[in-house]
Length: 483
Image 1: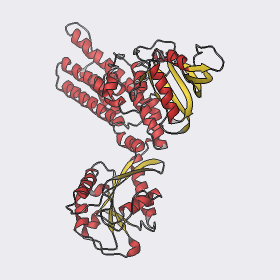
Image 2: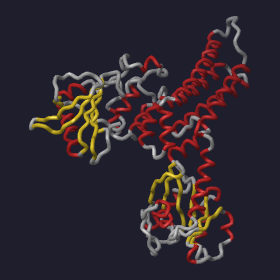
Image 3: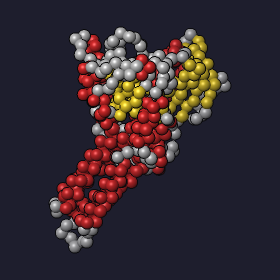
Image 4: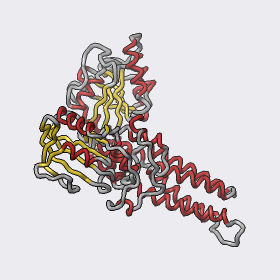
């Protein structure tokens, strides 16, 4: 994966923000690789249609070698669909529509060609092979979007939003990814970087002309400007928990000893038999992860192996996986069998879960009601029968309440949902904090300028204006092939 991406060698990117004039299609792309890449742009499998995408200097040449329009001649008129056939030496391969988008008026700002064929895997593979034989090379994951970034079509935050849209599991996830793709985050950070650049220019002018009789703003003015920026950045950074919830969803861990009804609860919430249900303890030996949309927000349900004292090596591995999920869970459904007294295995689970993020679910109330132990009072709790479906309304109400508390009023505001952005803004705030301390302590302007540059670089990491190549490779390698 990394080796595929490394062939691009990450050409020199622009040194500043993308201006509107740089986005106009009549301007030449700033970066162009010397290869033409190809990949299916639609998911693998059978379907009515599939799209095969080419990008690079020889996209038109490759297309013309394979495509025979019903009404010649080639070459193509840009941005116009043509009906015809893909052919090889043996004859016709498929009936298709083809379109050529000449640079720079394309997603990658390179010549881009698309072949819209029938969606059979054999057909798609054959057409891709013909493209490769004609001189194209197979695209690495995310390489089309990488080229769009390198050529100034989008910045890095917008490139990540493309992946966010592809992986969106709910309307809220789609909306916040689309906001980021439209440049709302980039524009906000660009304005804040402009303020920092202006401040840095004042400080460096003061350094260069310290012996001249020139009047400069005093430290209080600089402190106020930095304070305003800190407030804006801190407010944006604080939206991360809400943004992550809206985009990635709530992680709900179903935990408990064996045979208390964890898998039955998972099946009841999903409305289908996803997990095997058995009276034999230890049936679930690994985690089972499923997704649903609840109140318009994505929820990830994680069923785990029953936690108990055991010497079984396979069962122990499942138990350790369940333990490892606790820290990353937003909510834990701690399941107990309410028809029987709790035992040492229940106590073991109770001791490992955090009270604030745990809901005690007393299951099997249709089979009787045993007294609860004293430790049960530490948790919020609901009583249900996963088998009959009774009490699930109370369980879902608790889940809805948690979603509402975490969602806040972010529906109308820009939010962060990428951990990388959250960390970068944290580094920027740290640098600004050091600059404030330096100003208050009367340190030399050179030290203040160093911290301001650090804040600038951290913000530039979000949009790709100051991002190490290894970070770029890691980001784009997570994309699907063809995007």
